[in-house]
Image (cartoon, rainbow, N blue to C red; front, side, top):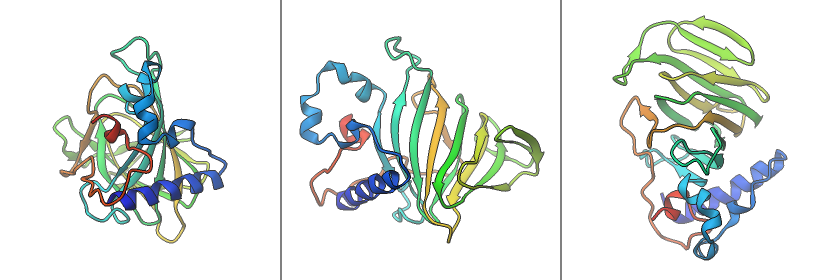
Length: 224
């Protein structure tokens, strides 16, 4: 992706979130120069990778397969000074944009549709070797728990959510024609440096063509 494109996505996301009464925290707008001046009191941002994360999963087509994320809070199982045992992310799925199949080894998560269009979520069980299973999958949505055939697609309208257990493969996308979707992910902290298993090989972090100055750094920029 080009840096200029990432900058525009960030600005659009700020406006989209504000339109849904979801302002981002101050560190969303820290510049490169701001980050260079921050003292140790901001180590939590650096150590726990808080902030912007925009990826096309190596697809080369962000609006077909990609996701915008902003991690607002996250604890650490390794450092007691970061006592939170949970994380919270803002995510935006653009109209028709797909996040590819993946599951998590350790943490469970809730994905909540906070506004905009409808979110489609396809669910499968997975095994510890990263394979998809053709077995009934347990679905938990807003206090309702039931089993459905592998590959069931549920639709979350604004205000609705799904709870995802470990080893549950899920892919989600903004239902085409219903609009962009504002999402919140609430999850537990994990001791693993990489807790995601993708069904097909993807590039989790996007290769960036530096065609413009950085507007606000990605979390991966801050770690360099």
